Structures are given as C-alpha cells and as structure tokens.
Image 1 (cartoon, rainbow, N blue to C red):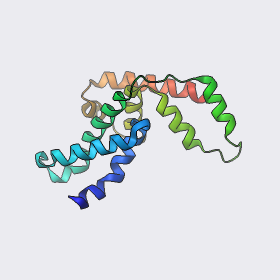
Image 2 (cartoon, rainbow, N blue to C red; image 1 turned 120 degrees about the vertical axis):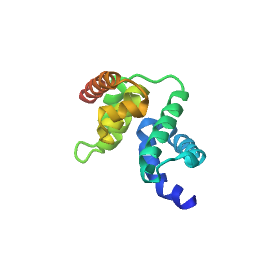
Image 3 (cartoon, one colour; image 1 turned 90 degrees about the vertical axis):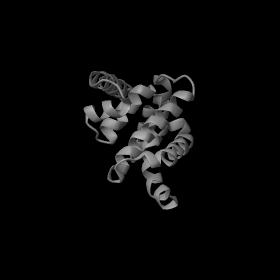
Length: 152
C-alpha cells in the first residue's frame, strides 16, 4: 500500500492543486484517504489511474467548496499583480494559478479537467456526474471569465 501511495501521490497532487488551490494539502490528504478506503472495491486494477482520478476530483471539489465563499476576480488586484512581475521572463505560471484560483469551483474544475488534463467533455461529465451540456456551458463560462481576467 505504501508503494501505491508513493506512486499516485504526485498524480493526486497535480490534480488537486488547480481545483483546490487554497487547500491543496487537505485535498490531497482527503483524496489519498478515499483511495485507501475504496481500494478493495476497485473492480479492475488496470483502471487504477482512472479510478484514482475520479476519486481525487470528487474529493478536491468537496474540499474546495468547503473553504467558504469564492472570491470573484478583482481587476485592480490582478493589475497590481501583473505590475509586480518583471516585463521579461515573467512567471506566467503564478498568474495563471492566481486566475484559476479566483474562478468558481464548478468552472475551475471543468476548465482543469478539459484543458489541463485533456479529458473529453463526455468523460468530464461522467466524472463530475453532470450532463454533458452542463460541462459545455460551464467550460464556455470558465474560458470567458479566464480570458477577461487575463486581458485586464
């Protein structure tokens, strides 16, 4: 079990970080506990990464929602943050993480699964247990919000 947890922890962390940025450590811990508890119910050991992804996304979303109200994007703060970055060689990863953290959890989750993880809309819908049309509308809103915040 220790070997399995060491193997999947980086993967779980990579999934949790953009979904629950304020509480990544808690999301990772909750996800690993859920994996540990549910491992006996895994029907197909070959599909372990897909199953771990499903468990992790569910737990990361739960932790992200638990943290309280979400903060909408504040254009002034983003402008100040952008001004702090040097013109050449700016750390865009930090700005992208900040923008992601400010999106509502439901939009951030869909955007991360679709754009960062490369999942199809149908797979994302199944993973989140929502209709495919809902995934499409959330993804559209998430992309629009991200673009607006990015250009400010």
